[in-house]
Length: 432
Image (cartoon, rainbow, N blue to C red; front, side, top):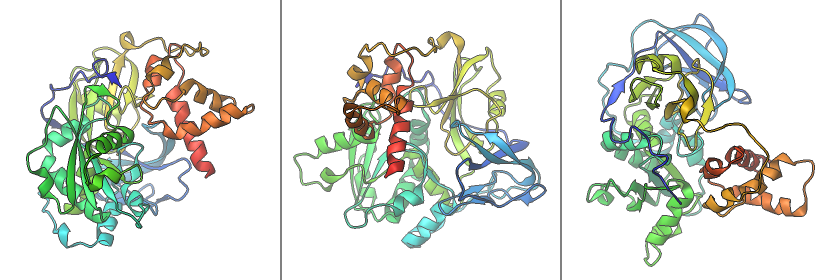
């Protein structure tokens, strides 16, 4: 592990409350990414839509209009994860169905498993623990022949953003309910709560759930500490010499974060679809940092305006954390359900970004928490036309990568090691 101090968010401990974002006059709602052939777009130019109305649907999830209004057009758009696709450009008109209304809790305890899964799907809930995936799909794919466990990370795995920590601190009662709903929907044998050791959980929390519940303390002063591997390893050490059921949990169980649990609460208990996000807005280019509650479809340029505008031009715009995130180059990109943070970084804080040839320094091997060889895996992907038997063996180890991106941070040649290994993993999964 590596000390976290070089990565920790500049806003840590400074932002104490959320800010309600401006209602956008025009929202650009992501509908369908390139390659998502099973997504059906349900609206067209000229249609009137309500707040929360389903405007695109697949067999796995739904997309909703975050505002009431009229569809101006279906446009091509770039998205925050670097992909492209179609989006609905909606002009604000009419009355709100959810915003400004007092929403009453439903009796979710009376709902059966199929009803809970239906509400999670109809609410468009994504699991953002790692790569965003529809939560109901993950639950349905769980192995029903053995015990299933729900593992909940209650802090941010990327220390440069504070979103999950902030959500846990401010919405903990709702998160607890979201955890209970998810555990029932997946028929979990037990619940494991992974928490930041600097912020102990309330006493007696283990007794508040119907399922057997335990907690594991994670040291957030080191990195990586919030990926699946670290949580499983810590749990196995904690319960090694006991008869606890949690000694058997592993990567085939369901891992969610606090943001996902909050969205489950909204979708099932309040029957409110996922049309808002809690977004950590940060960076030395801005006049102010904040955690904003924003409508999906709000353009980043409108987010900047609410943060007081730029005091200096950004050298890079980073989505979802300076360690594990990705960079974009435009402000005309809409806020979507996958986004937890956006950082506007000045040129003065950027290292030399010019990619060079690998110098075989060994830094990536020394820092990899999984003892992999990132530079060899990089060669596996970039030399597809010529592979020796050794590279073929090394290639299989890509599945062990947690995508913590530490190799990127120490590479003097600025090679995109983590991103390339992620592509290699995806390629091997697609071959299965």
